[in-house]
Image (tube, rainbow, N blue to C red; front, side, top):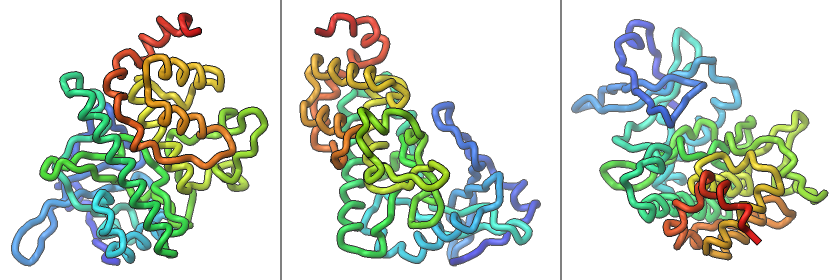
Length: 299
């Protein structure tokens, strides 16, 4: 894999990529990175980490790059192209730059129709289906998982109107542990004594080991969080189920609610992308402010 050697002079002359208030990066700074090709300068993105890249993350990045031909069958994935060495220390990666709107921002646009937002959330599910097939038919990807799956790591390509999943340096390929902000050790992952270690395995440090089931958990949280306007993963057991009952009263698709119920019981998670129709019609009433004002009326 190509290594680009970056000097302090070059770094100081790169333009910063400004993130929105809905998108926070605590691990790296993003720059515009003009890269010379044979004929012209091509704009790339440089993710420059605050800490040195550890061995596991480098292995993940190299795995993605070595297998980019197989991964090209999933157009939503943005594969790192080069590792950046800063005075002999691996500190960053260069990726394709995509003119975009971040999904975290788009889901908060008040003047955008809810049906459009739900459609983009469906596209995330379509990508998860493509990944499931890749794992099934290509043994090299048996342990592959997106891991850090949340709306701020998904952008909308302004040219194609399709989703792109970024920050794949945190993907799980069998090396290292990196899980989404929605996956935290909490009592909801052991409801009523069910053993969920097969779905959500942990290592000796009680850190979740990413897999297809954890990706599906995070995908459900993205959808529910959009409806709720907050982090549903933080709700207690009783409050989580009470909120699902509220969505049922509003007319949410029962298959979607059933898939949500699976998250905390000893049954495999399923992809809910085909069950999202109609959520746009209840989105406003599903918000936590309306829910909190009316949940006492649920019988």
